[in-house]
Amino acid sequence: MKSCITVSLVEEARGGPFVLWDGLERSIAFAAELGFDAVEIFSPGVESLDADALAKHLDAAGVRLAALGTGAGWVKRGLQLADADAAKRDQAKRFVRELIDLAGSFSAMTIIGSMQGRSDQNVDPKTAREYLAEALEDGGAHASKYNVPLLYEPLNRYETNQCNTVAQGVELLESLSTGNVKLLCDLFHMNIEEVDIADALRFAGKRVGHIHFVDSNRWPVGCGHMVMGPILAALRELDYSGYLCAEAFPLPNPAEAARQTMRAFRYWTGGSNVL
Image (cartoon, rainbow, N blue to C red; front, side, top):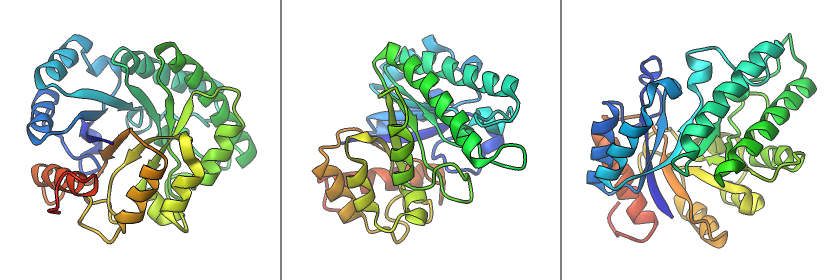
């Protein structure tokens, strides 16, 4: 398993569950200093990321790009994939495809989380799910050009009414004709929704494509009451070799949150006996 940490470039989301905030070059260099293998970037969109500059920063630090988040499509632009307005759904899908193209040029994945949207007074649950499935078909096929999967993230009940559990996410993926969508399993959301997190991961099996490595209170691992041993055991049973990525509140501050994440990663993956 490989280590990863989140970097946010979206000022409107400041205070949210992203660890590093102080600029792309500085954040990548700090991640490398602590020994992280990769970064996951939450950006306003492709126009805010210069691919050449990003490649330069990553190469200088010896760090990979693991994934790009699409949540700014919702946070900044009000775009979501289950919108009742077909034109807005098309705009949302274009936004996702643009990020897939940028991420794919780095052999990195793209995440559908908050942009999945929800059913409401304008869209009934069945139709909302159909719109989401249509968007995942589109994004999964587009991402296949780069030989990387599209990631779909079930969220807790307070953030979406689409898929809240891993089992619901698996059901959605199995309804698709594309096999190029995998699950992002976020331990914070799972702590709210799953009866047993380890069993849920085992149920997902090879559909697990990415892990958000975070504690029960969305602080860095080791700062809450999450029982991590069975979770890591389940991932080892699955031969999971992807990223454990910290999508955690930057508490008590970004630097210490990053250091605590790395201590926890090394402890739980066998690189240290100190948590």
